[in-house]
Length: 397
Ligand SMILES: Cc1cc2nc3c(=O)[nH]c(=O)nc-3n(C[C@H](O)[C@H](O)[C@H](O)COP(=O)(O)OP(=O)(O)OC[C@H]3O[C@@H](n4cnc5c(N)ncnc54)[C@H](O)[C@@H]3O)c2cc1C
Image (cartoon, rainbow, N blue to C red):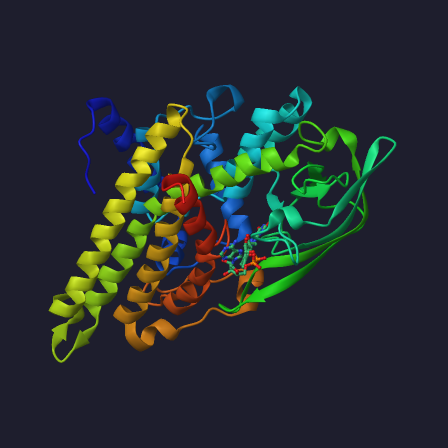
């Protein structure tokens, strides 16, 4: 989608375009084009590269080390990243706990944690969900009992993505038993090296490890690691969930990468002497997909502009999350269709841990991407929950 930018925005776009042209290694591009996530070391390297350029935190205010960019600049930055086959930045520190720390944290917490999020010296993961507490998060059972100048945490977290590589985790835990379930939940910052934390990997159906069980057994957390007030974690957590939906706004811009992947696959695949891209049935599907992506991106821009003016995302955060998850699933499925049998190529699970050699550009892992894309309608609040929010907030049902 091309927008009518002001001259200053065009100059900014050219600057960002030059940066990406000169700084993304070819094997990263190849792997992003192939539908693979970069491994944690590479994502850390990428984040450090952006931080050195002063672009580590595109959505943060300048006073906390962010860029202070306008929504249009953020949009341009993400569009150019997508255009250059750069990866999306890892978001759990940058977009989830970082903003909570700069909004509700103490000066000491801000000084200690924020610069290390931007420089990728710390890698954060999110410890909210538990067995029996996902959509119904207020049912969480992990306890945080005060003992002198520490909280002692016990319980089980589930689906803690990237806990196996993270240095820190932010956890919602019950610090007192109140009648109203949302009360008495506190938000705490934990060092993953703390004694008593055990992480067990959960393989997903794309045959990779993204996520984990995390067991907390008498984990002692200093009281200075409490965010805001004790017992008010639910309020902070809710702000964060709202922001998590906004995060999908940035990722939605990366759907452009799926469009180019589908295009090039469909141009290469010839069925009955006619390239797939020239066959009316397939062309129609691809055109429809592109239109839907454009519509979503327009919505994303509006949401970003309103957020910059202080408006809450309301139900529109949920709409964007819902549409992004649907289009991610539809896009990866269309990519599989475009590739045909070639889509069945699988990257071994061990490969991710061991570090992969460069892959030829014609070896896309589309099926693996399509399988993992199933998760987009579950995490960050399932589609049913988003429908429910839209029904209540937008239609007052
Ligand atoms: C791969 C993966 C990675 C994840 N990463 C993280 C992470 O890093 N950190 C973290 O804290 N969590 C993470 N999650 C957890 C995720 O947020 C939850 O799985 C999600 O919120 C759903 O909760 P649940 O799994 O307990 O399912 P449930 O809440 O039990 O839902 C089961 C089904 O019932 C439906 N349902 C539930 N309640 C309602 C309702 N009120 N109305 C209509 N339908 C309803 C749901 O939509 C779903 O289809 C991850 C999950 C996955 C699968």
